Amino acid sequence: MKPSRGLLPLLLALTAAVGACASRPDPSEQAEAEVRRFAERGYHPERNLPVTRRDTHIGDEREGMDLSLDCPATPGRYPLVIYLPGLGETARAAPLWRTAWAQAGYAVLGMQRQADGPQVWSSPDARRGAFDQLARSRFGGAQLAERSEAVRRTLEAIRQQAAEGKDSGMYACVDTSRIAVVGFELGAQTALALAGERYRESRAAARGDAAADGREPAALPGLTAVAVFSPHVNMAAGGLSERYRDILAPTLVVTGDADEDRYGLGITPTVRQAPFRYMPEGNKFQLVLNAGNYTLLNGADAPRREEGQGGGRGRPGAAGGMGGPGGGLNGSMGGFGGMGGADAGGGMGPGMPGDGKMSRGGRPGGEGPAGGGDRQRPVIAVQAVSTAFLDATLRQDSIAGEWLARNGVRWVEPVGTLQLK
Image (cartoon, rainbow, N blue to C red; front, side):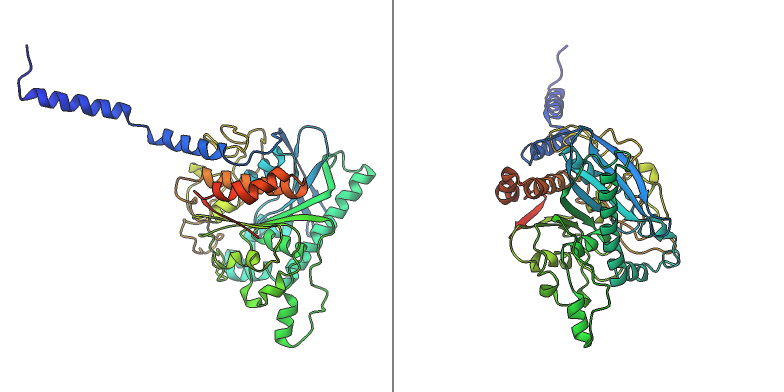
């Protein structure tokens, strides 16, 4: 039986529609392919090593320092990258960045004073929601000097323990003759102080008194390079050109155009770019990510769905790195495995709803992922640029340096801008 003339056009239309649906690319597959292409064109370090982690503690409970060391499993001595976490994070924070660096052949040592770790969210200021007061205290000059001195003391203790063989082999992988300091937020303030940031002189001059109170942080001997994520900038202190003029070491600033202040201190995304703007020229780099915010820049794994979105302490995430395709620097598909038991989120938890405002009785909230669902490409960009920076400075790798200066600038364009001076 032949179809009627009225049905024939309908059947033809349905056939065409089915064919179009069958040939139309799947959006998720397209996104995955785009991530693959982006990763393939990025910087690929010479090494891609398995990684081990060991945790320990130095000092007493009040003044102690928590340490978490990620080292390549392959025996050898590797340049040291000291990672200084943000306020309220653990020494295990930023697995997305740290694991990438360790895989590339660096000994990555997370350092966090217990006083600056998760226990700050149980302080009286935090319990009543006075995060601005909490931040003013923690980012103040006295605390900055204490943190800087704690880093120097800890590094000296590590060197001494290793020399005397009292470290149980923990630091056998560490080459302390080549050191980079990388910091996020609170840790970024410490890192810049160790690199030579000075602003007490200008502040004291405005008051008409002296700054010689013994609280000025001193630079870290042997420091080769510095990288700061979401740097803290106290605009009220003034004197920006004088403040950053002594930062001569190669420096990388990583921020985003949505890198808002979580504490109510008035720090805007533009203000976070001041260190790069006022540092002297020569081996200075700045990566500004489109829609880059706290949630991206802290290097934590994406929060698990079951953790919810409300305030409160939350649970630390499990290690594992970026899931999905294109998640590795060396073309590895999937995340960073092999780090069982690691605290991916650094103890921050999901925080508040994504508006970034303050809540009472919890902790300051983070924003949602940068750029909505497109989080993988910005993560890959940070991993590639920061690893190339470490290779160029700690290893004097000319290929890495040329990539930063030429290829990297163009490659980053889909997700942000890379500047150098």
